[in-house]
Amino acid sequence: MNNQLKTDIDFNNLFISENLKRLRLLNNLSTVQIGKVINKSRQGYVNYENGSREISIHDLITLSGFYNVNVDELIGNPYSNRNDKRLTFRSFEYLNNVIEPSQQMVLSTINDDVIVVKKNELEIDFYWRTQTNQHNHVMLFEYYDKTYTSKVFLNKDKGGIFFINDEPKYFTKANAENMLFKGVYMATLNKNFVIENFF
Image 1 (tube, rainbow, N blue to C red):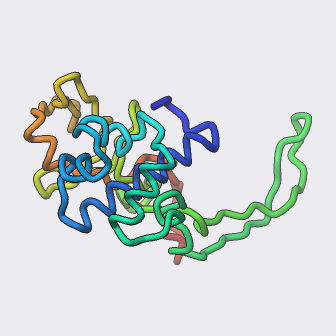
Image 2 (tube, one colour):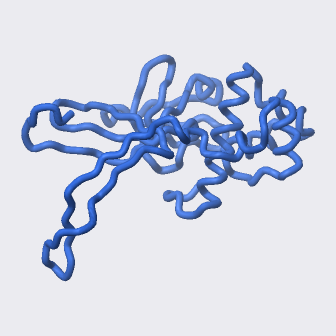
């Protein structure tokens, strides 16, 4: 996948990938088992789940019937309507190198599920929730029941490497089964000093 999710197609593939993986895991099924449901090899199905191949309408319909859900549940935003929080700020912006008042800025997580990681009293990181590794992006993930943040690089044999405190951690294809992605890094909020009730 590209370094950025630039188009509606990128988001649609990501949403479908998330939904396919979520439903498979909820039903305690393997990728081989689901591949058989749609008459595909394990790799053929995995290509749908990791977003590297666009799923056919026929396979969407087959899987919606198999899971007993409507197609909307397979193609829609997997995290929509989970959070209706909005923050509105008095706002300014640079216009021709001058700071001018502007329309209020609204920060919203209405359509996305955001995970917050507090690094210390003055710094927090934000992650957009996803169960799919986003190539060349810092990920929040579990590995053998411990949580890490790092870019995760996969190689051709499905093993790979990530870094913790600049130390490489190698994993095999078998080890990768114990890796659960939780989110992709979006932003960091830094405070210069402590303000009461501001995170």
